[in-house]
Image 1: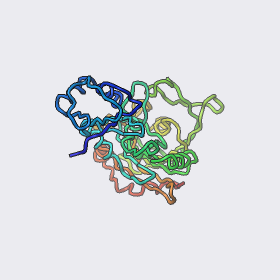
Image 2: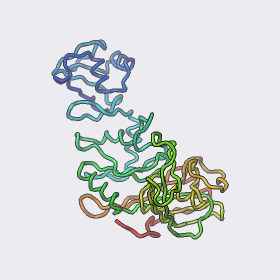
Image 3: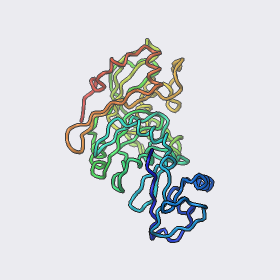
Image 4: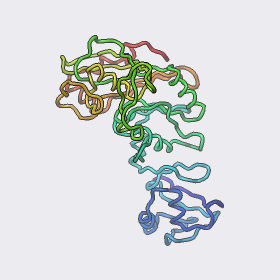
Length: 336
């Protein structure tokens, strides 16, 4: 059984009603839920069961709530900034594939956003606050993954580590390798894709944002480079491709594969004129498989993320043997 959460009533809270105090701390907690908790005896004031939502609180009192209902991240000011159900917390903690004093690495599932956007309230950047021990230890993003892409995602656990890791990404001192299931088989089997690209569509809505080919010198155009290697193929129908982004542009890998004429399976934004692969999940088949990056305390952090279920199913259906990619970096120059 978990210990209850203790919420001290501070001078800054003033003389306040219980329900208002709780809603300040847990911004998504409804009045109905508060009253239900009170009826069940789950809210206590200085150890005594609260009787009604309008009960008055004064500085120096303590309010307790069950951790099974609200799992907070308490900062020095006592404000609870994130609330997860026990199931969501277990789900988040199960993503962790590496953790130390400076770094947390997740195997991000497809379909969960890394950061918030228009109308988006459920995202990893906010949820990661449950790992914080104080105001300076909230894990902070060091790079990005598309919502529909799964795999390795790195957070710094303190400001110094975050700055170090972010600088490593910006300075291209990392090696990231993605695995993709693509329509058709690229020729040649290994190579480099490069060219200018630019954002098109709506910058206010990332879901509508697309990249398009650009001309050199076009305002806001960026240059992108991707190395690729075909690990295996199922005839001319499909291929398992390892991708190394040399640059880190928005949707770069998806854009480059579609531009080559071998779009990634399940990609509804970047397509080509090849037939879809029958029998596969409609999800995007792009996975951040592995990363090598300098560690803030020295040495190199080398992390590999297991394939998501929909890509395991695709490998089985297409006859790809995962053991063929036992070293994700073997086909590329390693920078870190």
